[in-house]
Image (cartoon, rainbow, N blue to C red; front, side, top):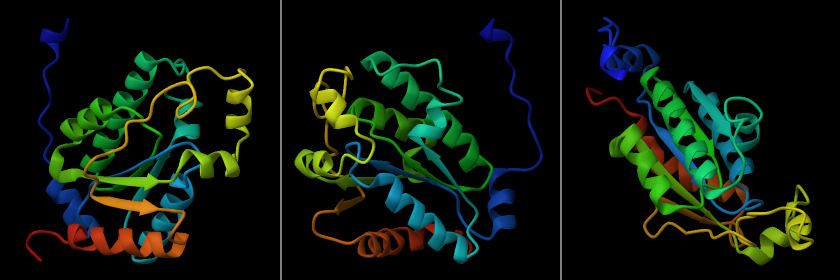
Length: 200
């Protein structure tokens, strides 16, 4: 069946959409344990970009799993498929000229490498929100760690499932040492050159 899929050539290109938006488009991928602060930081980064007139969109674990990935669970296979679908969705949004912010635990290195190959290396910024398991358990914003420790949640990253930390992320944020404001400043400084269009 796939051999009958022939892509249509449209006249408006990614470059046209980027020019119209007056900025480059790419994916910022926030990875880290549950409760590390990924969504909090991504949210403030988006607000800062919005103030600068940058067109953005946030993809977040909870809003994705309630919709497009509501059929998936937390087994290793489904986690991989969850990330693959998010990457494909983000890729379409990058093509539409948006700066996409994605906040997902995404515990496996191979899945994060796959995201990079889907959106292309040049359009991918890996942000490791590095917060220790002890600190994440202390925060336990959603009460997930408590449930996992009680055996009510299976495949909980950091407890009964592994988290493979990035070895060479573009940006690393240690939330136990820096404030949200400092983290946001660090990220904005890193991506500012990336926002500029090549002919500027």
